[in-house]
Length: 449
Ligand code: NDP
Image 1 (cartoon, protein in one colour):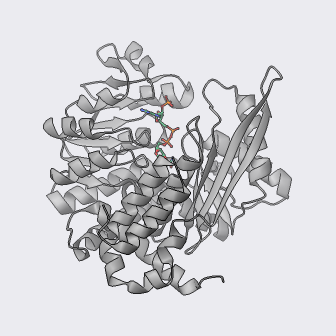
Image 2 (cartoon, rainbow, N blue to C red; image 1 turned 180 degrees about the horizontal axis):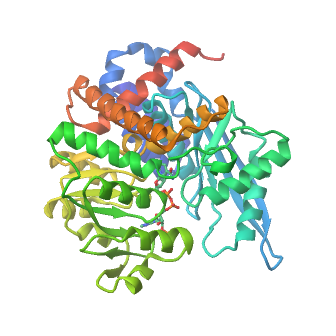
């Protein structure tokens, strides 16, 4: 609960204005709870209505997305873009295609994105978008028609200096390609309006790997600094088997760990000998099939139905990389009881508030998503820089910059946690460090009367 009266009042208004939006309320509450010390120190924020402005999106766009399937049937989905905060740069954040996408999910992701983008040190504001369209089981042509229809409306609201979307769940290189093509046709303009593009048309090396690699760079730095430890010789459990999970697995193995489990929305695989990533990449990236296929190729591995069972596998490090609220308090207790010492988040808000509280109370090194998974958007920022410069940097050059950014994010969050009297609480540290720059910019830009 909030001790500070200003925070209490702001949160009560958010609850009243956004009834039933549980993901959005959860995200706002988590950030505001971290800001007690900062708000006490800066009474001028209340006078400037800073937090009231921060929790209200600058713009929220909802639109109809009609498309025609291969059999000629018409479908209508709902499209969204939230342009949450542009104090420190153009809106930036991914597009998610998943049946669970709704106003609450888009607003929670857009709100988180403000602080994440600030933490990268790059000039990017916070935004997010997507649709309740389900890409599962759709043909390539259906995906293309949907993406084109989606972009027909979205193109009216974005631009290289206004709002630069990227991928997220259900949106990878293929979807970004279709959307970029449609934007170019409609606007007759070749610009870096989207990131995560193919290398042939303005994409950046390392963007595909960036979130997963960045998660491991952050985790390695945090373990090194806070525990004098590393990935070397550790057993790791990673949920999900999409973009983030696959490249987190790749980097964790490169850093000397053994990854023993991965999942999808139907179930999880356990391979005590270490997951064969070449097989997973073929199943998920090439064939777009289910993770259960793995045991057909590796008969010594196990497949279990259901997702949360993955957290019962004993491990030293857990990296949740699937989706929001996938790790609850019961799973947190099981992980800790089985010896897990480090939990860093690849997905956005994968741990419930109760799980986070349990980790922090039980000495787990907890790396919150907005710090730990910022490598994706950071590399998107580097893609924007390359597009503006009309240059392409090498893999090594981008990877080095990513590594530096992730190390800096950890150190900024860690230092901020100390300044707040909560040394090692990276949740408070990341929220405060991300907030400070945005607050300064919002104070400077003034209020439009
Ligand atoms: P993908 O669409 O590539 O993969 C998502 C994966 O999560 C799939 O394997 C999916 O399984 C699985 N999944 C979905 N729901 C569940 C569930 N309830 N339990 C277990 N597994 C589930 O998405 P990304 O890898 O890009 O994104 C994953 C997370 O990382 C999201 O929270 C996203 O917001 C976050 N993120 C992504 C970034 C990026 O650069 N891509 C950047 C920063 C954060 P199935 O195939 O069955 O649907």
